[in-house]
Length: 336
Ligand code: 6CS
Image (cartoon, rainbow, N blue to C red; front, side, top):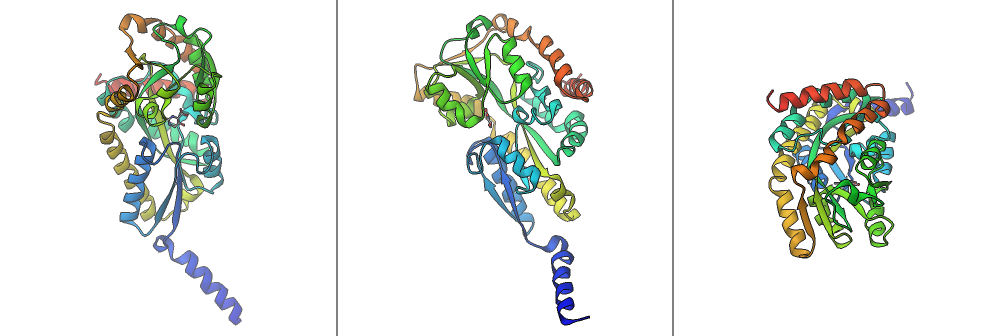
């Protein structure tokens, strides 16, 4: 062996042979700011990984690497090791993920909701192969809070949404759902929403209360309506080649950090909705916050069947299996 060959072999041994002992920097991007729910989750994940390994996690909040669609591309191509992208956007890539936009499917009860996310076979067994087909290791899904409409006009019935250009995430089933609610759905990336409301291009959007407060949506709308139609679901993934290539000890570090961050983010959200609504009311006393009565909700609830049928049409090859399993999981979460 020549000296050059020996050096090259030693170098390769150093890089490959070190296995899990090598300290790496892992890049993790998400769709929100550092102090919003996805950012809090990511901070907890980073803290856990760094406490239990030599690796460093570098966090990229919303806007630093582009929109949601951009960070997904970067994660799929391996530029990022981790990404948080909500089914509201992933539904365009994985049609089955649109199931989270069948209105009134997820329970309003927080304990049932958390139990569903913890134990769901649909999430833990059926979705991972669908994400894997897109080069992604699905690590977890978690809820971010009751979704509320914020609009420039008051809303107590679908008729009030007539002619309302209503921003939705870029997800075909969410478009269908707002059609069924009587609005004119307008899919937009997040970065365009405030400006579109300010300039009157759109007149409404939906999001959880913490996000309406932190992104100051109340400055450009006047009414919050709680129709109880959904809870915001998000998902954290790793680039699959990266994850598959990790030694077992690092896979365990990642999985344990995800479990710790899941528990943390559920605790963190206790009281968050009500606190956020209070902050909104304090910042803008004239903002109306209306919880629709059962009677007022009835026509919104009545759309669920048609939207579910649409999901089965456009939700991909596994749509029926996913929907059936979700319903079975929800029954278990409800204690039936
Ligand atoms: O509406 C959206 O697009 C955003 N909403 C939340 C709660 N998180 C990120 C997402 O981009």
